[in-house]
Structures are given as structure tokens and as C-alpha cells.
View 1 (cartoon, rainbow over the protein chains, first blue to last red):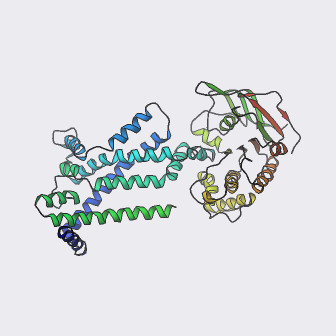
View 2 (spheres, rainbow over the protein chains, first blue to last red):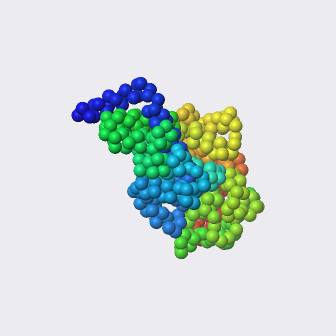
View 3 (cartoon, helix red, strand yellow):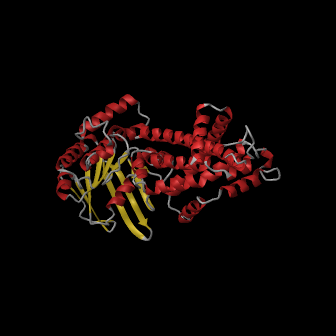
Length: 230
Length: 226
């Protein structure tokens, strides 16, 4: 019990004392994960919208594929992205390996199937009269698709929040392509893994507590946005 | 007889293998209320979707105001903006009444002051003055249909299509629909409605078109103005 209480107390201490290293870790974690979610969403939201709305051969297969990819292990993603970005890999020339940029790419790959699958589910379950109604009122096909997205906005926002939750808490990919370099690519989860391996359980707990506070803040902001849209 | 606003020539619409509509020749005039009748599955709703330009025919030619319409492409939106459809159970967007009614005007890039003025007029026309700020999806069924009618009227369409407008309406809302639709031919609007509420539909109808198994039945005829 002391272990948990000690962690909680130290976590509060880190939060209140404005520890520069911990705040640096928090800022990097937030920056990397939000960038990854935005990058993934740019592809996943339109793709989910198209798959959810259109009828075509192979649609069921794609839905099953994206649902299967939800179980994609983070270390596998890390391994693939590592292979792509490593010196001898096809994208090695970009020089991204062991940078925050590599972590953004890996986390975006992780978030992409989750956001796509949830957007597909949101659009499929949405009333199928939305698009035709917009068209009969004079919308272009693109404006009608936007109307569908607007009507599914709460579910789409929930999909983005779920994507953020998935990437800010993952450790496998971040450590493989980021390298856990102090003051450069160290995030909450890689720092927790490091502290635990050093036997600094309380410090690990403290960082975990701080991570939860950051996740709570992001979800509260998303909730506020939903409330404003109502 | 008024000039034909819609002209259909050899129009065929299929769903999978089934022929839902096969119209050799059909003209629908501006300034006339046309009621489309027929049993279930006769192709009435398919005809409305086709006239609303949201479901292209598989074969045949469709003219609007003398111009042959394309089956797809950017020009179709410009034509579609002259026509609107009120569905049997119209979908209202998850927002306020006034934003629902203003939706089509926003798409047309109308300025805010004109939009607000026209929305207020349309809501008054359907007996919903002051309903603007209310959540559209929380209204009664009849009120929701009236919002859908206001959303169509505000666009001042050249053709108004209605699918079963009197179904599930309370008497007050039915009266509003009947009054408003009755005024439209005088403004040159072509009204095409599918209805099973024969008494109300026939009171309004200036022309009745009968469909059976997707084809026109010869007793199509004009009635004296309602």
C-alpha cells in the first residue's frame, strides 16, 4: 500500500513542483501523441467515411480487416516502422529514426486502424437519410459527406479520443523507434519503463499518475468540445 | 395547360434485376399539383428520387425546363438546387430548428441577414414562428414534418416533391400542409406528391398520375384546379 501511496504523493509532488524534466516529458508525450492522432485522422476519417457510406465489393472484408488491425501489437508496429526508417530501410534517408518524428509516424500507424474502424462503425450506424437529405437541399456530394460527418461528430470525436488513449499509453513502438533518449525522445511510457527497470517503482508510479492527469485533461477538453457542439 | 417543367422520355430505373420504373413519356407542368397514386411497390418513391435528381435513371432522358439533364457531374448540383424533396419521415439535422431551415440557404452562400429573414418567414408560413432556437429533433412528429416543409419552402424551389406528406400528421399539421401546398401553384411551383391520403390529396390535385408496376396507367388525367 505504501508503494501506491508513495507513488501518488511523489506524482503530486512532480505536478506541483513543476519539475522541468517531467514537464518536458509531458510536453513531448502530448506533442507526439496529438500529432500522431491528427496525422492518422487525416487519412482515417475520410477513409472511414467512404467505407461506411458506400456500397462496394469487398466492403465487408475491409471492415473485418480494420477490426482485426485493432489487435495490432505495438511492438510489431514498432518493428515495421523501425525497418522502414532504419539506415538500410527504404525511408532511411529521411533520418527520422530515434527522433520524435519517428515516434509520431509509429503512433500514427497504430492509431490509424482504430480511428478508421470506429469512424466506419459511426457512419454505418448513422441514419442513412442524412446524405440524401443534404443532396435534396442542394449539397454537392462533398458537402453531403461533410453533413454525414457533422451528424456523426460525437462518435468521430470519441474515435479520436480512443486513438489518443491508444497512442499516449503505448510503450513498445515509442521505445523501438524513439530510443528513449533523455530530453529528446523520452515520453511518459518509456520513462516509466526505464524507472521500473532501475527499481524506482515510486518514480514510475508518479509518472503514471502524471500521465493519467494529462490524459484526463485531453479528454475533458474533448468533452467540452462535444458540449459546445450540442 | 402550363409548360412542362419535367419531361421524362423512355426512362427506366432498375434495382438489381427488378425494373422499378419504366416510363415511356411523362410531362409534369409548372404551377400544377400532381398527385402520384398507385399500390405499394408501384414505383412512386422511385419516381420522386429520380425527379429530385438523387437517383439517376439507368436508361432514358430527363429534361428540366427544356434542358436535358446529365446523370452525374458538377452541373447536376446546379439543377438539383431548383428542386427539393420532403421525405415521408424527413430527417432533421441534430441542431436547432433555424439551422435546419437555413441549411440549404447556407449551401447557396446567402448572407446571414437574408437567411435569417427568410427562415423566419418560412417558419411563420408553417405555423412555427418562434420555434427557431428549439432543438429540431425534440419536436413532435407533426412539428418535425412542418420544419422539413419550411426547410424546403425557404429555398423557393421551382419544383417541390413530397413523399406521403400527410402520413402520421396531426390534424393541425395536415391543415398547414394543405394550405401551404395549395398556395404554391399560384407562385409557379410544380408540386408532385405521392400520397395514400386520397381525400386530402384529391382535394389538392390538379392532375393525378397512376402508376402500376413501374408503368403509367392510362387513366392519368387532369382535374379542375383545387
